[in-house]
Amino acid sequence: MIISKTLDYAVRTLIYLGKQPSRRSILMKEIAENQKIPLSYLAKVMRQLVKAGIIFSEFGPNGGYSLKKMPSEITLKQVYEAVEGELKMIECFDTPGSSCVFTSCCGQADIWHEVEAKLIKILENITLQDVIERDCIYPEKVLTINKQNTLINKQERKNANT
Amino acid sequence: MIISKTLDYAVRTLIYLGKQPSRRSILMKEIAENQKIPLSYLAKVMRQLVKAGIIFSEFGPNGGYSLKKMPSEITLKQVYEAVEGELKMIECFDTPGSSCVFTSCCGQADIWHEVEAKLIKILENITLQDVIERDCIYPEKVLTINKQNTLINKQERKNANT
DNA sequence: TAATTTTGGACTTTATATATCCACGATGTA
DNA sequence: TACATCGTGGATATATAAAGTCCAAAATTA
Image (cartoon, rainbow over all chains, first blue to last red; front, side, top):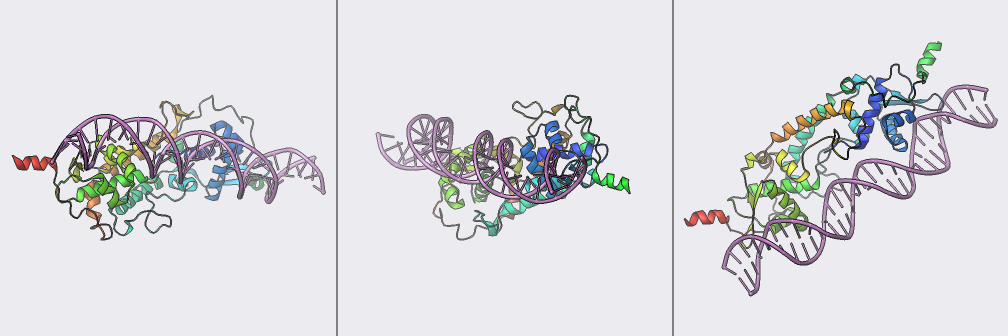
């Protein structure tokens, strides 16, 4: 019952995106280098976050990623399920592949489902906003990349042009 | 964040022991067959439960296992930690072998520690008694073994003799 | 002593998490 | 249109942990 590296990567990425001054598009490469995450693995995580509707991706030059929602609208439950799939404590009850032979009459299932429900509620009540607020400013050693990056979100540029 | 098979085995074993009419000593073999748990693997789990002070073991003929405490005194947290080790959601903060480069300033750590504390509290408030109460009588297909077993706990016999 | 039952540890197998790679698709710019 | 940029998708490899096996030793009883 430990937070996986993958989930850690996802949360760190979202913190990083959420802390950006304007809603710029951030390159995956920048995140990987800044957060010391293997680029090619991060690529996978980003896809999952995009698929879950948490972040927004743009192709091509000046492309990259940005949050799709406000940090206060992104819950830890959403992030968890984006990378780990549905949050379930037990794997039984008619699920194909289950090896439990006591499905019909198992005191554990009820109990764990209750724990699960409480845990889900806890994670639903914690938002990216909360996490960001506890996160201090990036230590200097980390803030070395992309100082010169002043690109803004394409969408914003389009809006600015009209 | 899924309940491992090992923890499932441990809980099922404790339910089984807790449901015994008198505090007889139950053979590991009986538990394994009744609960469809690989005997040689169960041996490991039993050792962990003994080590954690949750069950009591007796060697030799008429030996076996029995609960060391009342079901109402055994919490899910104890059982979890008996087989999985200390319940921790994140692995960072000065722990040797940690790969986290943001230890000094990580918003996640605080948050996850809070979640962890809440989860621990939840598990501390659920006892084996609670689990047993939700568990129905064993289905017939399972109740095939040891009908003839009428041995009682050695301790009880000693007491009975005095 | 012989039978029984738990204990301890070494070992193997299997599953899952993590990481890598490369070709493809989409986008902007000249 | 051509080209550089950058995310996407899937196949594959590697590392780590979970699950399972095996055997000999220690404790107990009769």
